[in-house]
Image (cartoon, rainbow, N blue to C red):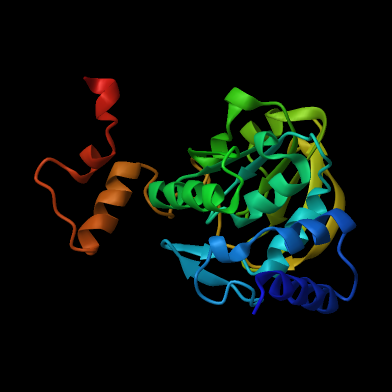
Amino acid sequence: MDPAVLRDDMVEGLEYGLDEPLDPEVSWAMRTVPRHEFLDEAPYENRPTEAYGTRVLAPKTAAQFVDALAADEGDDVLVVGAGIGYTVAVIAEIVGDRHVHAVDIDRRVVSAARSNLESAGYGDALVDRRDGAEGLPEYAPYDRILLEAAVVRPPTALLDQLAPEGTIVFPRGMGSQQIVVGERDRSAPDGYRILEEYGLVQLGPLLAKGERHTGPARNRTVREDAEFQSQGYFARSGWEYDWVDWEDQL
């Protein structure tokens, strides 16, 4: 079947499930972005899935986030949690490729997102490997920040990277979370105040420094060494050498 027809069906199904129409720009963007360039298996079904070792948002969840983001053409946007790159592409369709910046902690995911975005025609969107709690200060300030991981409150570094009238969208809470839109407010106890509240979602947590002492190790070498070892990967000199940019070293 024609992918354009599948995208139309997907969006109409999402709007039916949400019991209200999406913002026209969001609807148009989701009808335009070729999701099959990001996901091989059932790309237009409204369900979460797994790819590249990460959880992929269901289209409905992506639509809720982008709708809450309320970005306009030319807005500078930071996406924390690039995933496979689909949400990044939908936002890029609205604001323009060069206005979208995204970060993810997983090297494999970053590589996949870059490749997917290039294949889908959004290769000018920037995707970098960073700790999401630290954001991407080099390109700040941002008019909009989207955090695709659950937090009790947004990290201070992200709030500091907002433009004066900028807003941050994030799933608040643990377990089942509520999508909220906030803005920086230095007089508030947590440094921000809530502007709007949207529907419920269920995402994994963002592990910020010192926030969850019982969580996975913050040291990425320790954590990723263990993950690679469990997969049967072995290199005498250490797996991390696979990621050295040798052109810069020579």
